[in-house]
Length: 78
Image (tube, rainbow, N blue to C red):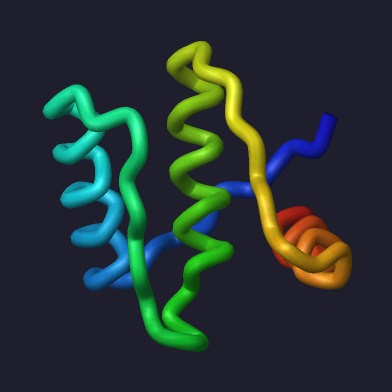
């Protein structure tokens, strides 16, 4: 199992996590977070995955290309 190292989030990333979590707390089972290229989507995903794992939830990271999964794995391990 891959363990993601926590990173310090930027202000807008923290806001994105807060708003996304608020939607989950409203009982939405699916929430889409859209951020521009270079905005730290992988960092945010890693942070949220760690939070969810710490609360006992299971998570899955899905991408449409194997290369994106490989890049994310490398990025989140660093």
